[in-house]
Length: 120
Image 1 (spheres, rainbow, N blue to C red):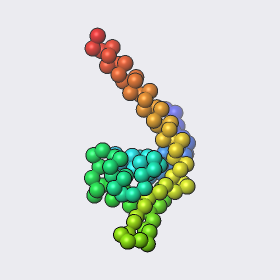
Image 2: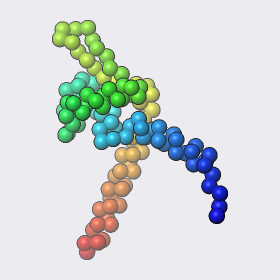
Image 3: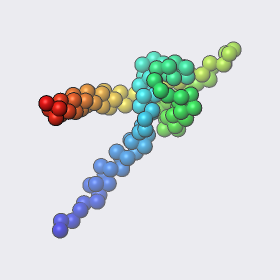
């Protein structure tokens, strides 16, 4: 039986796991995309993501802040204004998101083609 090279596997798996820990889940990327699209206030972000609840959005924003992907700013105004923006670090995700979008389009097309072949 061939020997498994755990070091190579770990070199690949750990960074991927770290990345997925930071952005995985149903909502995190959607929140990042909403903010990148110019939605900086809580209600704007909430309205731009169908199906997200205020409680879930609040949790996701806190998680993204802890991951240093979103910066929360409280403005000294009346009423108090809170805005969210992507950090410079989060902006490095933009090409990754673009690649995921492109892959997702191709994958959807592939799946649709396979299902259409099965129903013929």
